[in-house]
Image 1 (cartoon, rainbow, N blue to C red):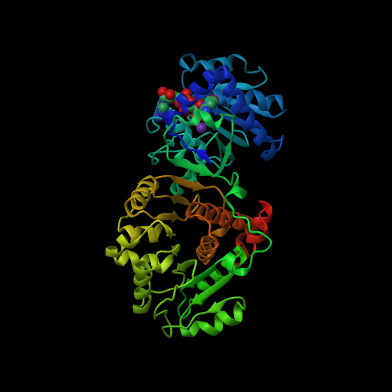
Image 2 (image 1 turned 30 degrees about the horizontal axis):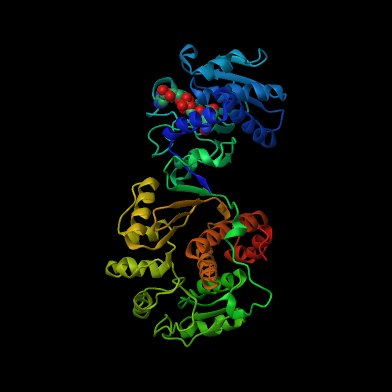
Length: 494
Ligand SMILES: NC(=O)C1=CN([C@@H]2O[C@H](COP(=O)(O)OP(=O)(O)OC[C@H]3O[C@@H](n4cnc5c(N)ncnc54)[C@H](O)[C@@H]3O)[C@@H](O)[C@H]2O)[C@H](O)CC1
Ligand SMILES: [K+]
């Protein structure tokens, strides 16, 4: 897992690394430029003309090194400078000296407009909104039709806080070593474009002295978080779980959770659905067992949890009297692993007095709106939501999965993990129901809460990527769950 540092900490990380490895900062900049160019040549055909706009700090220095390297690879490169080069950073000035003559060098106003624009004006050093020429440049570049790529950060975007004023709108941002926090905020996706994170080889141990509790997870050592089951295992070893939800007209939700749990490997899945859903579930999912229904069109009655390894509640549940009672009963009486989603979260939001029943084996999986209902607070921006999520889990001692691009997992010890799997094609009805099934399944199989959530969220996203690459915009939630076994295979999980 990659620790996420603040923009201010980057400088100190670089200094410690450079000193510790006995290299100079210019060499680290060379590395950054090299990894950028290695990515660039895969994405951009050689025939495209490239204009690189460089500030005079180290982000601009990266830009100059990139200009030199792309020229060396045969691209036609123009550099447009903004700011006074004589007062540039030492590594900027050194790179200016070694810029090949073949690369055209002008002030930003005179730089010919290329088919590709590389933004190397500001990186993590930004400390105020853009003004003057910087603002004019970014406005002008944003109006151009070109492929736009930012180096490390879109210029104008602060690394750890909300955007203010004009920000370069990139199609891609290639960020070095770790994603800067603000690149993960959904409201900044219009500036970041597609995020690409490239290591520049700074070893994990250099991160240890920084006490950030935020991490970026890209599936490293995923297989080690999984349980292995001996050949002699029987279906009981793979967990007996209950999935509760569904209501008249919304029976598909709990069906998706059920199929997802079965595809994740659950041994026995019991469904608690209203009477109107019994035939639907029994005919559509023969592997599932249906518990005696309570209500006619909405779930009701009580839940027998004797011998049950985990319970997932919420998909399609509705907010009728029976559903409200069931959520209350589950929270009060069941101390085993529990996943609360959708209407179960909404019901909890309506009854804040029940929040005190939450415990370490409960995971809540709200999307942004549900999270708002749960806390009763409208997050001002994603940074505010990150803090709210952390405060919530620390206070109530549970786990919270805030769904969206870069789903944010918050643990009660204050650690927060951004998940780096997933695709835009997962933004489709039922995708969250699939996650509920996956999480309940892993918990039922006896995974620790931490491993269940990390594995569940990561596989959900990865299965979504696999489905998205096959079905594109036509991706269905059921396509996502059908890709779970392929995601397991991909990571060697048998
Ligand atoms: N480990 C790494 O990630 C590496 C990063 N590198 C690159 O270096 C930049 C950060 O460079 P830095 O010199 O610290 O800052 P900037 O280039 O972003 O900014 C320069 C300078 O500009 C001034 N400034 C800030 N805001 C404004 C503003 N609104 N208007 C005018 N001037 C402004 C301020 O004084 C800044 O210091 C990082 O992003 C990477 O791209 C290294 O190349 C290698 C290692
Ligand atoms: K930049």
